[in-house]
Length: 71
Image 1 (tube, rainbow, N blue to C red):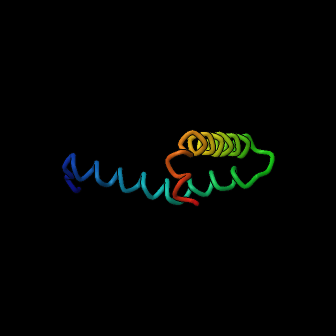
Image 2 (image 1 turned 45 degrees about the horizontal axis):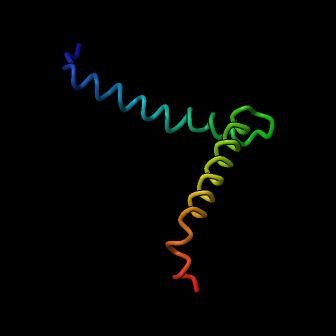
């Protein structure tokens, strides 16, 4: 029987978690986002809209800084 140290066990567990996230969880999330009727997609769209609105607001407020460079 192998006697593994605590750090070796932690490394094995971390590696397995990374594999799970990379494979299974990523696929599940992508399926949810691609589904047109999913709550995840709606939340993703809402977050994207909010981010774009904040970007537009920021650019509008800062327009005097870059306005002279455009002309």
